[in-house]
Each structure stands twice: as structure tokens, then as C-alpha cells.
Amino acid sequence: MKIIFFGTPDFAVPSLQKIFESKHQVAAVVTAPDKQRGRGRKVSFTAVKQYADENNLRVLQPTDFSNAEFVNQLKSFNADLFVIVAFRILPEKVFTIPPKGSFNLHGSLLPKYRGAAPIQWALINGDKETGVTTFFLKKKVDTGNLILQKRIEIEPSDNLGTLHDKMSISGADLVLETIDLIDNGEVKEILQDNSLACPAPKINKEICRINWREKSANEIHNLIRGISPFPGAFFEHGNKIYKVYKSQISTEMQLAPEEIKQTKKQLFIGTKTGTLEILEIQPSGRKRMKTEEFLRGYSLL
Image (cartoon, rainbow, N blue to C red):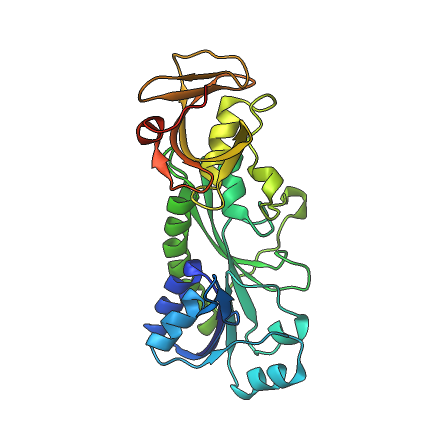
């Protein structure tokens, strides 16, 4: 089949690679426009564009997906199928172009965690299992008919970085399997049960803020896992901001909410219920470091 691939970040690259190395043809790749970053205004581009350029694939970087010129350009490829992985919401006039439809890879077991941050919320909520789903696009986001799902165990040691990588690889396998099913006319679509749906909204600054008084050690530990390494959970102390990237629940130390205890190598902070040991921390304007290194130059007391 002739396919147009839509994707932007690292998460999407394994899926594009699977398709490129398969019997199917990647007619074009659609990704976000290049950006200027930093003081030097150096131009940077997406991970998907980098892979596409390295493999001589046609790249499209529109700023307006409703633009008639772009829509006509997509139509000119006569693609059979559009595949969307970690990309922005597409207008109906775009995803209805190919005769075999458009499908998306989503980082949850839909209808659970519809929205922008499904991997993060599975960790924040302390789930033991998540997964990846392929589904046909509909006008309402993340509500289309399911094609395939694959379950993935969440290990106690997982954080956003490790789970993201596992799901990216598993998702790529699911994408290719889905394409083959569509190509062979063997898809059995499953309606989503909307009564089981729950949201996975975008992570904002307030969600990242650690509340020692109102959240338990377990809740804060899962928050830290869910947004590490980016954007990172943080707290304010002594008019300074500290990000926390790794923690563990202490079974020995019992501190009051916000109470701090530190030794030469360990740092503990009390929560609403239980005590958390901080294992990796980053003072504002400094590098991320293990707590033992942090305590050689800093003190929260």
C-alpha cells in the first residue's frame, strides 16, 4: 500500500521505520515545521523529519492543515492510507482523503486515557498496566473504532522515559500489524464503550507542583514517575525551586507533612501520609544530580 505518515517526536520514529522497512511504500511524511531555538536562533527540526531526511523520504511541513493547497497536495499522492503517530489533531477534510481511511496510534488502552498525555496519567494514577491502541479517526478526538490493542505491564521502576520507550517500540509493531490487516481486508472494527472513557489532559505547571500537605507519599512518588524526565515535578523551598526526578517511599522514616530530614547522603520529606526519600534532585539553574551529590553542596534545613 501507498502510505502517508504523520508524526513529530521520537515516539513516532520506530513506527515510521517499521513501515519504511516493510513491503509498503511511504509516499510522504508530514511533520511539524522547523523551529528556531536558543539565543543563537539555531534551526531545529523534528525527530521524524531527521529520519525521513536520512532515508530520502518526501517531507511536508504545513502550518495550516485546512489550506486548500496542502489538501490538494495530499490528494496528489493518491495514497491508500494515512498513518498518524504522536501528531496534532487533523481536520476531517484531511483524514477522510485516503480510500482505506486514516488510523492513529494512541498510548493507552482506549477508551481509557483519551487526550494528550495518556502515558503520564497512567503513571500518575499508579496503574499497573497500560498499552497501545490503533483506531480509525473520527471527528471527535480519540473516539474512533478500535482496530488492535496490545497490553504493556508497568514496572515499579518505570517512569515516563522508560515507559515511553517501551510503548514506542510496541506501538511500532502494532502499527505494522494494523497496516497489514487493512491491506488484507481483515480488520474487525470494535466500537469504543464511551462509558469507560476517562481523560488524559495535557500536563501543565500546576499539575507538576508537589503538594506535601495534601498528597500522600505514594501519590507524590507516582507524580514524580509520571513526569520524569520531562517536565519534572517540583517544589518550592526557601524561595528556590527544586525539581525531583526520582524518589522512593520510606518504610522507616516517619515525618510530618513538609518536615525535612537529611543526613550526609539521604534526604527525606514528610507528606500527608507517609514519608518520601528523594533520590535525584535539581536545584534551579543547576544540573540534575543524585541526592548524595546534592547534599555535598546544598542543604534544605
